[in-house]
Image 1 (tube, rainbow, N blue to C red):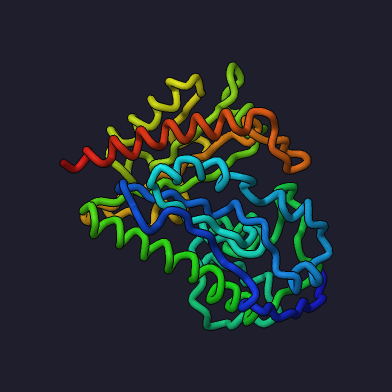
Image 2: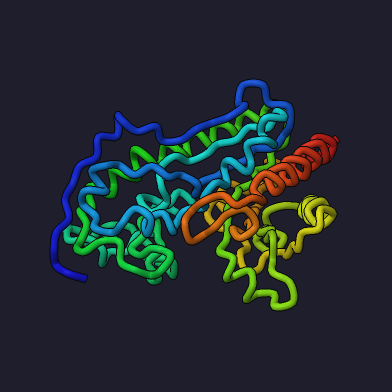
Length: 295
């Protein structure tokens, strides 16, 4: 990477970090989350990054929030991230930082540059989905700490608050973390028939098997090909918020992008509303199942 130093300062007061839907009259012990569907970039960031907007957007889970919204309107709260994943990834641990991306990284910092950092997909992405470098220089570590404080922490504070509210009301909370996966991966994994949905449960660690099996069967009943934990078993949200002893469970739901959009141009296809309606039917039935689960 070039030794160019990239410095900018974002006015976070002008940004709406996340949207929430139907969080006032919660009817079910289910929380929907869409951490990667955000399309907003701070203009200060765009002015400092030479990568075109469409290439930056390749990292996002386009329209997942819109796919989930009809289900939310049935009385299920939905928390959706507005800020793009290419700016900061809220489905990573905040300590997943690659020291080599910064010109002023503090040598005493307690950071874990794990495998995601090494491949360029830590809490701050180094590359986009096509593995192109997002930055043409080294970042200011202090600026990235502001991203964490004013975007990452805001999202997770609200997520934790909603989990607490649902838990207090029902004595039980289930978090369904919604994502999308590239159609190429779905075709490679299953040559006979592409994967439509992947349910990630950390290999049965994030929720009781009977819960994930209910969701699997409900999706399969609509004719979709559903697999468990491969290629995705769950990430930070699934792991971090799972607390079985407190009756808090999690699950990561991955949707094949080819089902509902043209990935090359980030546009919905003609099947979008069908997929959204099917998801609404499945998630509503899932919510009713959860309502009875702890009785």
